[in-house]
Length: 408
Image 1 (cartoon, rainbow, N blue to C red):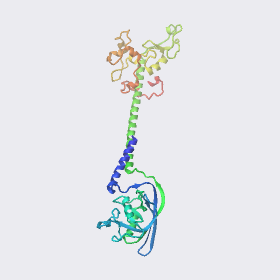
Image 2: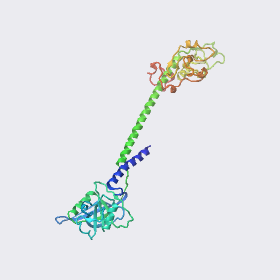
Image 3: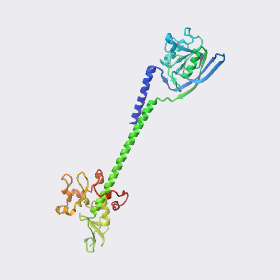
Image 4: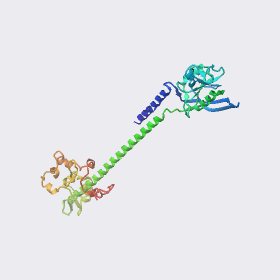
């Protein structure tokens, strides 16, 4: 998905710029090259009104593609032919005329055409200057910028004329002197060759990608917040349900009878029996808890087990269902019935739970299935809270405490 954002941002960012360039300069005007380029040192020499010669050299030009070489000649600010041509210095129409002497032919001595950018592509400007026998072409920008572009020209054209692109301020400085009648000599000197890594990502693309990234991050953050809130609620509800189940198990545990072993009890007679949990034989005066399923265990062994699992470790009888703590319907609330009243309605031969009287026939299974199933797990009941004693909820999280401590 992120790569799609980048692709859309690049295409969306480039298209408006290309359309604007086409409207301003035409579909084939001013093609710009990149990568390796050669810098041009521009030297201008002229004599001011006081007869003092002035010379200046600056690294303010960049060679276009094609022929690269040094040139020297008189500066000629070109114009178009006709009455309206005096304001057209783009060199897009043939023939080329001189601003200083529009009615006279162009100089026979070496001269350099000074042309303004615009109206047509660089190729036409250079071709017209070459046809007019110019020694070189100096094209100055028509917009203020701090970065010079490299003109893209045809290479295999047979022209031995250098084309240099310079700043707007530099071109206007030269044309101002020439238009005032000052003879200006320009020397174009080949300078350094540099390599530039051209990036096609413009400001619109960067803005679009940035906004897409921010939106993606906001959506991801919102999703994470929602996820962790739901997870916290799930864990919290599961913990509260576990506590309430533990409290219900403790109440059911208080109804299970206990007895102390005596010398004449069958559990200590002969080889005796052993506790199924600790595998230790029963001894006289030990306390046993007798479950309704008639399985006996050490009280200290079975109590933690029942608080944790709520079922007999041997036959899986559910003590919550047997003693009236049951989950009915979709409410999943703990109901406590008097076990004595419920037992009176059952046949001793059947080991069915008393609460089958409260349940829909489609809601609960037969008693055999009830004995083989464990108590309802917290995962199954986590969506609804149990209407049990509030004191079980206010207790702190049990963590690693024993099952007995969790209900305290």
